[in-house]
Image (cartoon, rainbow, N blue to C red; front, side, top):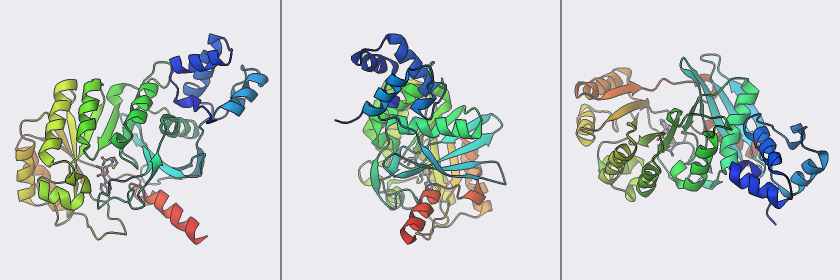
Length: 348
Ligand code: SAH
């Protein structure tokens, strides 16, 4: 029989589970507190549960607790990169970023990814499996414990496509924002997607207050197709329409992520076309100088090209930021630490 993943259960489900073991309701409360408030790494930390109960829980449940394989701290900006091992041996990575407004954690939503974006290191080995809600949560729990810092913002922008793991993502958000858990505000959560249209609409209908970030990366269908195979399935206009719908349903301003790739999508014409594409939308554009990966020969745009692109957008009235590169000295960019680790293992 498959063991119950208790850290993925919401409070009601946990109460039912404990009742099925013949335990009193307050035991569920204690257990929930240990998992989601005190962030216990192990059932044995739960000293107010009897040894007998802990033993039983060990036998019939699967207590998700990620093991820190590596923790790299940037000497430049204090960014911390974590490599975690899951109970089945897979490894994932997460990042802690320190900003003036608080600490932000970037989490992975899948082991690998099947979306195939051309410039991205996380997708090179394909998708291994979805992460469970508990495995998404525990990236944050462990980072908070190990760093000793309170985390206030979460971005689901690490390895994986969150809207390709929809149900687990939603459960994760509900547990993360629960007042008896870390109680993170929905407004402090950003979910980044390559644009799975039906799930953007589904998410809009949930009417959450989270921020949707759409990985656009091109201003027309043809160019988007060159960079993102997912564009074969969804036309760029369909994706933009889904983003408009997200704003209509939630009142939340959508972020468009646009990775500037030297000579590919960074010309003045690209900028002009982009302003036309998202004209009239209540949105924010985040320009990301592409992080070159070894496996592809994409290069970053020159600094003055980035500036000119930004100015062109701003002149049309758009709010634009250029993403600051963090943790440059510690393989900060998407999927690179995990990839290096896996390569070294193969050689060992
Ligand atoms: N699958 C989701 C979230 C993970 S990627 C998505 O596609 O949005 C997070 C962001 O980083 C995306 O905008 C992605 O396109 C971008 N990204 C990935 N690799 C990159 C690279 N090498 N340089 C710049 N941006 C990259």
